[in-house]
Length: 557
Image (cartoon, rainbow, N blue to C red; front, top):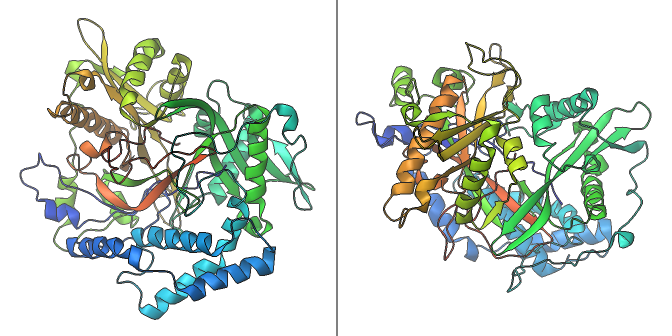
C-alpha cells in the first residue's frame, strides 16, 4: 500500500465568473497560479493555442512508441542490480515507460514544445534507468499491473489470509534503524510527526512551498473512530531515537460500485531527506501492510502524484484565487501583461457575507450528526467510489476539528481550527437541506522575507437534497444549488483569511468550478486501490457511462 505524496496544489489557470458582466473570460485565462503548496507544474502562461497543441499531442501519444533501446536499457539495469524480478519483462517495462511518459506530458514536464528531440530522448533514458525500483517492489504487490486489464467482475486480487498465516515479525530494517509505533495521543510524539513532515514532506519543484501539517491537523486526520495506533508506523535512529520516517493508515469503509468492504486509507509516507538512499519507503509500505493484515484488512486506497501500477482514476486540481496581492508577492501567481494588479484584485473580489445566511446557513454542530449523516449517505450514492460514514465518523470529520474557544475577530478562526462545516437548516421545519465543508492545509513559503505561510483551503464533502428531486441534474437544479453552496464556502474562506481555495475534479465539482472562477492546475492526482480490481472510474476524464468526476467520491486528506 502506497502513500499520498501527492501534489495538493498544482499550477492553475483561474477561470472567469459568468456573473461578472464587466470581466472577460480571456483575461482570466491568462492568469496562471502556482499551487498553494507542492506544485507539479511551473509558473507559466497558458494560452488556448498551447492547450490545443497539448491536446493534439496527447491524442497522438499512442503512436509515439518508447524506443526499443530505452526498454532494453531498463531490462539490462534491472537484471544487473536485482537479478530476475517478477514482472520485469519487455511488455511490462514498455507499458510502464509509456504511462510515465503520458503522465509527464500531461503535467507539462516532457516534450511538446519544451524539449528538442535530443532532450526528449535523454529524458526517456533517464526515466527508464529509475524504473527498475518501481518494478522490483510493485511487481510483487496485488495491484493491477501495467498492460493488464481489470477483471471482468470487481473483486480482490489476492484472497484474505487468516491471522496465523500473516507474517508475525516486523520486516527487517537497515542497520542502525528501529521500528516505532507512534502514539498520536502523546503530544510529544505527534509533535515529532509534525516536525518530520514539516521539514521533509512534499514540496514543489522550485522548492518554494512545502506542506505544513499542523499538530491539530494530524490529530484530526489520524484519529477517526476505530483507528489503530499500530497503523501509525515510524522509524527511528537506534542510537538517538530520532524519528526519521513515517507512514500512516486509518480505517475506512469503502464502497466501489456494487461492493462494500473494510479498507485502510494510507497516507503521509515520509522519509528524511538525508536518508532517501536507504530505501526505507518500500519497507514502510510492507510493514504497514503487515499491520493491516493482522487486523484482518486486506484492501486499501491511496493517492500519489506519480504514476504507479495502476491508477483507478486521475483527478486534476483547480484553484480559486482569493488574496491576490500576497499571491503575486510570493510568486504564486503573476499579473498578466493585459491586466493591472488593481484590475486583478477586482476580478477576484468576493462578497463580504455569504448569500445563504437568510436561508438558514449556519455552522454545523454535533447535534446535526443524524441529519447530516443521512443527507451525506444518500447524496454520495451519485458516485461510484465513496466512503461510508457512521454518525460518529461524520461528526468526527465535520465537527471535531473546529478548534476551541471563541473566534479570533481578525481571522474569524478558532484556536487550532482545521475544518469548517456549514449546514442549511430550513427556518420552519428545521430540516437540514444542505451542507458543505472545507479544511485548512497551509504551506510554508520558503525564502521569502515577509510572508512565511500560504493559507490554503481545500474543498471537503458536501450534499444537497435538491439532487433527490426528479430529473434534478437534467433541469440544472443541482448545478445551480452547488454554485450557491460552494460560492458561500469561498466567501467564508475569504472571511477567514485564506489565500486560495482548492478543489479536485471529483464528485459534482466540475459543474461549478468555472462559474466560481476556479482555474485548472497542471498537476494530476492519481487514485489507487490495493488488492482490488475494478474498471477505471471517471475523474478528470469521463468514462463511457459516467461524467467528469462522477467516479470518485473520496477526498483524501
